Image (cartoon, rainbow, N blue to C red; front, side, top):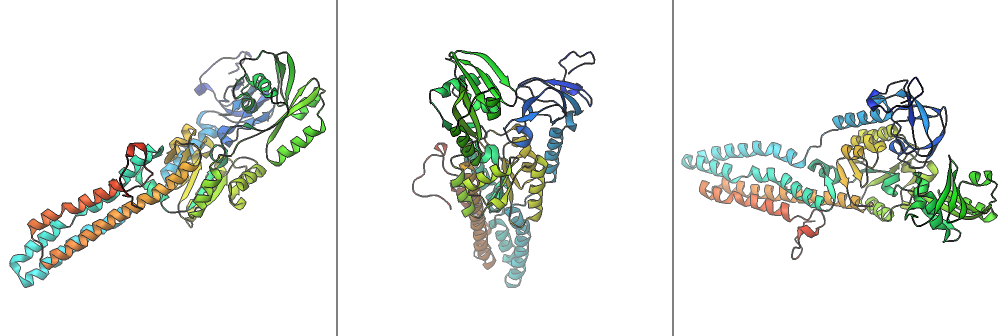
Length: 508
């Protein structure tokens, strides 16, 4: 914090308040919401927008807590601090959404609620009927009916099946908070996907390169010391073996320096031309091709002439299109919620096979929450599942019927979500939904077996074919059957720990 005497002091975030003047250095997070009053830099606002593309800031520009300063020191006049920042308000929305989430009534609860009443009524009926026929046997037959019927098997069907399914899912890297999530995911509904980090890999990478291949390691070495997302895309793989000197950063423009004795300049066209370097015609054609594909173009000059160019973008996950096609074929309505530009979202949607009309761009965290709440309130198309990875998705994850956080997600998204997928890509999402559907199949089979058993033994008891002793011997049969169905049901694909079973043994 900058004191009244102009000196910079390190203080606790809790000590900051409205009006505090805060200095934020390169690589540091902005601790308050406020306006930039001194300096110009670029910020990574992925915490709130989900997009890692740097945003230029200058005096008068509003910035938010959680944004990361990338290039140069800035000073921010605080307008909100602590829980009153935008990030703090989002976390309050997460808590409110979790508190207001409607409970899901399990199938077994709906069935077992009437079971005991029906059994008691049948026992009374049995006693009344046999009292007219043979009063001495009326009590025995009524007691046999009460003994042989097995509400415990009916009660165990769901929890046993769920426990077995949760264990198998965990061994597959799918962590589910509770069985109610499985029931909600068992039928198709609305599936809303965040774009960056969910459909895409969430990082900048060189997608296109034009120029000598030998130049790429030199560019990587020059960019290695910079925290900028574009710089990290070039620096992957490192350049420690190269001699780098005279490095100079230009805010919002690029970087220049000497690598192994070669003077290089890397950055935007404006940065290159402002230094007097010439961009030949092929570079313009390269930039147009990058723009058509939603990529960021970067030029590399040496000796006053552009000699290479790169197209950078966020790669789409390799399994995204196939997984989305599978989910749509199974009845899920798939949409995209993104804070990115509309043209970029449209290109991603077309690449992965999502209907463009179901995609929303330039969304704030509050916008995402509003869309999810609207879908949940409609309830016309089944459960609403939100899949994301960032703080900007957290409130929407908490408000959805089921929130799913993907690998690499922030702590806030993991807290808000009901399911966490530790595997890479979208394939684990399809496995989750298939496993939930199969789990409900196992539960229905176990409940059906229990109800069938009870129907048969009730008929035998009411007809006088069972004595109390025979009823006591038969009663455990239903429990054993339900246990066998629950633990032999192949809800999630078998892993190495599950061992191999002979033959089929899979309940579909």
